[in-house]
Amino acid sequence: MNLIQSQFPILSRTIYGKPLVYLDNAATTQKPQVVLDAIQTAYTQRNANIHRGVHFLSQEATIAHESARDVVRDFIHARSSKEIIFTRGTTEGINLVASCFGQQLQEGDEIMVSMMEHHSNIVPWQLLSMQKNVKIVPIPFDENGELEMEEFRKLFSKKTKFVSIAHVSNALGTVNPVKEIIAEAHRHGALTLVDGAQSTPHISIDVQDLDCDFFAFSGHKIYGPTGIGILYGKESLLNSLPPYMGGGEMIEKVSFSGTTFNELPYKYEAGTPDYVGSTALAAALRFVSEIGMEKIAKHEQDLLNYCTERLHDLGGVRIIGQATKKSGLISFLLGDVHPFDVGTILDKLGIAVRTGHHCAQPVMERMGIEGTVRASFALYNTKEDIDVLIEGLLRVKKMFRM
Ligand code: C6P
Image (tube, rainbow, N blue to C red; front, top):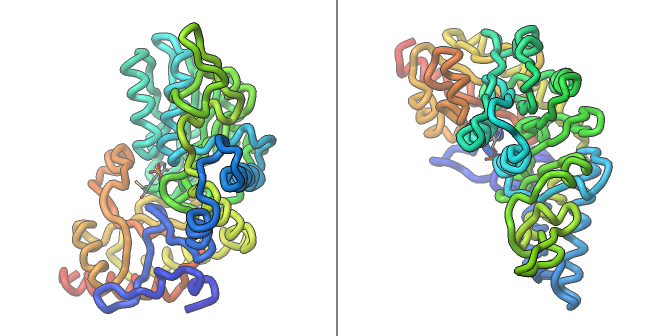
């Protein structure tokens, strides 16, 4: 166990008597001790509802929560903490934008999403389309898993109002040229959202450099707790959109003769916020920042290259998603063995991978397959983990007489 791995208590556990090899990081990452400590400290030292109490504990909890917001602002290089909305995760962030921005749309307006989106960046727009009769225009991708950029440029019309796009595909690993996509959308007067669920843990994010209008990500995929995520939105836009949910915290004054809303970011944070999750997320972001996003990205690229090579050498492997720019994630098929069977055998060897459609059914449809086996890497994975995976796949090959 190396120095980084030793900071993740779960990594020392065994599964069916075998050391755990955790390669399902795109689904969720494991938590370092500093994050577990942050949760423990929040509950044992300063648990009190925030923004409401005059008492000491409430003020201390409020300060911790608000400084967590500042940590997020710095991490994604936002201009102001007012632009950082705490949500439950990427899914909620996208739903918030679809719902609030959607209110401004007229029948026949168009929303562009790509064919490689996670369901979270398709279904909220479809729900909107059911209410408002707006049209969803899918951007195609090619056999390698790269967006067809020529085609994308042709898809704009006067009715295009929004482009919502994954930074990194969770099923293919493709890193999309989001900066170029955003610039093109802006040229056509459309707003943009970047689904950063699979990029934030692996690539340094600068929302001002990207110039995206909204950016969503989940805490649990970047070593933070479940149930907390971030929606970044440009301040002027968040000010101009209506609130999402109603309740405590998001109001300025409530009366039966009319209610007024709180200032940003509270306007979008109805109810008691997850002030424990926020501080634990901040601990996770500090943790990765101390290691360095560049170093993490380099390490994961090395793992991706090594795994790709070893899979090629193994034979009988079809890699699904061969884009030139990929993140630390590899989807594949082993002969005609069902991904579920591969995953089940690997599991018995202590290896955790994800199998199936990865909540990206249109990707599977485009590739003409039902699902894949997916190994996804994090900063604590090593080449030895990949060696164990390859040995496991050799076992599968033997069992299926390949
Ligand atoms: N993908 C995976 O195994 P939530 O569930 O809200 O934290 O994240 C949703 C989501 C949105 N966009 C992308 C690109 C994603 O990958 C995910 C989550 C996990 O691939 C769980 S389905």
